Amino acid sequence: MNDLYSRHRQVLPDWLALYYDEPIEITHGEGRHVWDSAGNKYLDFFGGILTTMTAHALPEVTKAVSEQAGRIIHSSTLYLNRPMVDLAERIAQLSGIPDARVFFTTSGTEANDTALLLATTHRRSNTVLAMRNSYHGRSFSTVGITGNRGWSPTSLSPLQTLYVHGGVRTRGPYAELDDRAFIDACVADLKDILGHTRPPAALIAEPIQGVGGFTSPPDGLYAAFREVLDEQGVLWIADEVQTGWGRTGEHFWGWQAHARSGPPDIVTFAKGVGNGSSIGGVIARAEIMNCLDANSISTFGGTQLTMAAGLANLTYLLEHDLQGNARRVGGLLIERLRAVAAQLPGVREVRGRGLMIGVELVRPGTDEADPRAAAAVLEAAREGGLLIGKGGGHNTSALRIAPPLSLTVAEAEEGAAILERALRSTY
Image (cartoon, rainbow, N blue to C red):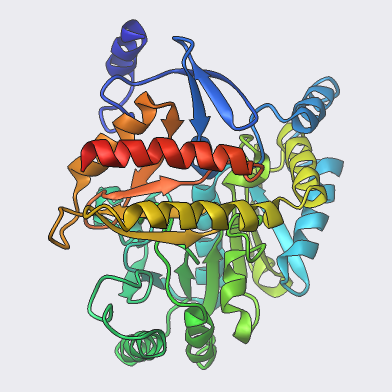
């Protein structure tokens, strides 16, 4: 493994970060478990950054990919593609967007790029509203709207971005307000911004901020924003790259917690739908999707191999009610972790929904983020046989827990016990 790490450092960028003091190579997986090259077995509570959504080596997906690979792997969007049409039809129907059109990409970054292109073209404006503490990808345009300094390596951008309050409930200037007053204050902030700028193209928002540490506003905030945005025709883009497909348990899409004012104009998705295959995409009303007046294709978006994986994975998820499982098992896991947190002064908050759970760490006796403790817990959890993630805004001090949605109650309890030991060893 040391040889592979040395080779990695010689040939790959310095900024391509790795977890752990001694990085691991994951060689194979099954169900909710993975193994490294040294033969160590881990319970996977991060799923390749929320991407292995259903299970590792899911037979239904493996079979679909193998059979498709035996026929044709790729032809591009210049030819009719039955698996792409099949998956687009299913996603359009599930989206809640009327007269929906679907465009496939290879990643969430590219999906958000496309959404920004559509919104700015449709609205003839390059001004975009985004949320503080947000993350939308690593391309030039998506870095330009990301409201998280740790993931924004340049201030240059083709877009003018204005940042709105509301994505973080328990920090910031409105944290002490109750939910209704919090929403009112954020809406007032939005109105104030709109009063000082030309009408923007869109507001882009993650229903639950992923890289930001699994933070979210009170239910209904984006519905309240939508009422204000509609007055000027400003579009609402819901970035569902991490929240889609039932992960939050209570809803199939994260935006449905804010549905009072109707569905978003544009939804972006990626990660979990492919269960590890490179699928991203955009869903939008036809008038928005069709607004481009120049040629646009995707060489690898919607390729037959990934579409076969997506169809098989989505079918399995729906037929086995994995959204319901996320709600049930995730609810038990959150309560178990909250019981642990109540005994530890370094745990500020356990938050989240379904199987999308954040554990925020602070220096005991203070409200200051503790990124060193987060790194220590990450290491201790790995040593105990559990893989988790981390994130956060001003400092990376939130543990991110997002297992495959097929997680069992016994596995949830096992993971919680390992994480408890890791937390106690740190605090």
